[in-house]
Image (cartoon, rainbow, N blue to C red; front, side):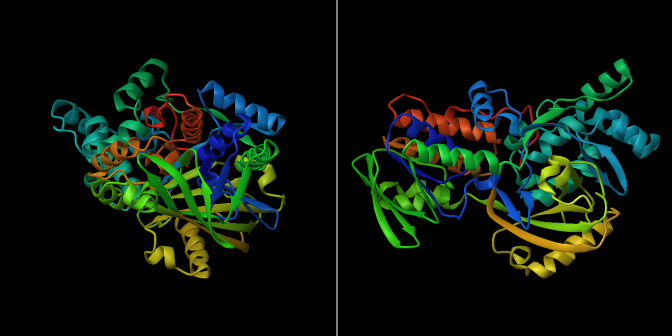
Length: 460
């Protein structure tokens, strides 16, 4: 058995296979485990790439977390806000906040725009812009949703499919918020989790313990080993080729669970994949992520785990306060550690910007946002190339073509955010990994059938 990629899905699959007594090789091209949820450590400071809240409605995932982390789980209160033109607004946006912070005139405009959208909705509802305008009105869409969404995705909302919003932010509505406000005087509609658990030293604690359990159960973890080729004979995988520090090697594969991006799996399959499917994979895109972690003198500039930075003149999309996630991430009480998050395309100007220039940009963004910060005493830059699967207008058709082609390979399963090209949370990614492992063990389970639930905001 071979598992490609040691992120949450790959680790879950490898652990399930190892515990079932199957020989499993887990290959990871980076130098550590955790994938998109990895925790990095620099000089005692720990950085969570993207921020990851541990909250789930899946009993078997909760049981696995409890088993592996136990007392190292902290219970944290969710606090994240929108910083817009120097004003702090609730996240998710509530009617009370909009009216109180934006004033009665702007509030009336938002409500009138919402009423107009209800009377004359956009049909057909094809794009993310259509979806948001229909549910929030043009005014609120242009004020809040468009600036941040386009900063995150690097595309106009008219270029993004409505599927993303339907998956990620369903359940929020202006009407429900107004009803709540009138009923209770709060406007505090809360469809997102108000508390969550978090590992004391970041998500990396979980991934490292999973790696240890895999090894103790007889599995093999190969770091800095990249899947480069998959040999398919008939309709089955026979072996895989890995490229590591010692060169290329071949590993027999009774089953392959792949969590690497579909656009990378396709060329590895070569002739084992129809041309149409290979072309579909090549058309899939990912948004990249750059984090600049600043160690600052003095107190934390804000108490939130996250601030969403909606202003167009601030290049960063979010700011994290790592102490708010866990005090143990920041070993000094006289320093703050703030992570500025930037979204870009792999290889673009921002991606290629030297670290020193990125640090200056992060400092300038903190100042532009009006956040009081002390002097920078250290800085660290992290880059993730395949952070967010893009839900553009053609992605669903491409994934459908790939799904059909991959199902024709009897002993190949795909799992995880990148393996399915699906913007899911950690718990659902791990569930797809478990289903991939069970398919390898002979059960008729399809990871494609796991549908992410919209009850939480993205954990990354």
